[in-house]
Length: 515
Ligand SMILES: [Ca+2]
Ligand SMILES: [Ca+2]
Ligand SMILES: [Ca+2]
Image (cartoon, rainbow, N blue to C red):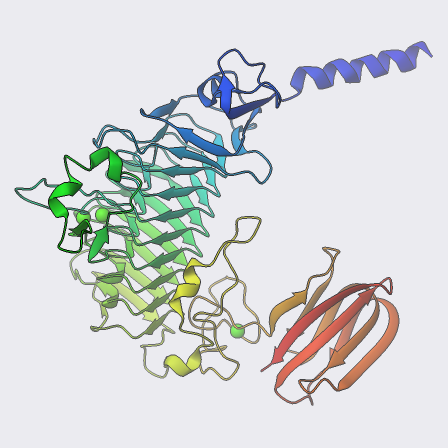
């Protein structure tokens, strides 16, 4: 008995000593609050109480700030310091009353191993968020309507930016009235003008309608990976500021001079309007882009901009930019571009770096790409709402039709693919196009194996039914099975509905298009 009690005490005390704190911040929080959900702190106090392993839960609502918020706290390599939106709530840090000034970013993060999740930063007098630390993780955040770039990284290394959106950032006073360059600075993501030795990584991020560029790496020396990131319509011709959240702040001193005859306050944008600007000033920035798309930007979709690093583009798609791919400096940089696609480039692409390795792209001999290859060309889909977990929305834009000549025409680059070989462009054709009614267990997977021409139902199932497009049942099996392979080599091309029962009552429905 004594032994049992001793063991019990050991675990209790051991657990207590390493347990992480939870501290609540709210718009109604105070410096004297207990930091609990019923007695929250203000955000600055909450973060001051946190250390590695702790989580600051930020309640939803509008956090109005007239000055920058500076977070200097760090986690460590085994425990992040978390600053997370609470549950599904939406905390918005609003800096609309902050003076327009290049020393007035909204939130500054100089610490390392900090994980920020689920917050919005808007209307700052300079960058929305300004990061100088390393090994930070910025997730599910929104940066909008700031007076310089939405998210700026200016030092540090190994930062991971996941599922963030940065849009409509516009530096409307740059250059002043004597030499106007309105919009010349505000990028969606500015990761520039510094040197690092590690690698920053952007996954599932979107950048749209920013005044200057989608991503900008001017004078960057270091390394960046982009996975599944989207640029859209950066560099618009003008901004109508009449309804802008900073209108009241700068109305008399600034916006009033732009009033037009319709009573609107419209400011011409002088920004560059590139999607992914990979370098600048002949510095060596090594950029690896995988499955990225760049659509309808004012100038270049993918832009060397004199980068002297190694630029690797795998399975990227450029569409409707003035120039989808602009690699134009034959004295600098190494370009490796494969399995990529170009559609409707207004002027011709250019691939003329110091060293170029390009193959298996739609513009190379023997390959092709035209509008008939795609399910949809509706670029407004790019702005669809994200999924609940923050990941990119399901879209059909630039997805391949089953008859596309781009399917299985790529070379194996070590990325996941379906069918016999990788496809060209950002989206691999996948026979399983939709889950109509999702399965309730994570373990169920239904897909078409192009290699063996069979439908695979993996997971424990009690019954499977398959219907063709006319709703005729063409297959049925009652079997308590863990893995079914259903031969489909003699089935016609087209759409099939697959109903999978688990434990008889738990029904999942899938749509599969056989190529
Ligand atoms: Ca610029
Ligand atoms: Ca820029
Ligand atoms: Ca394929």
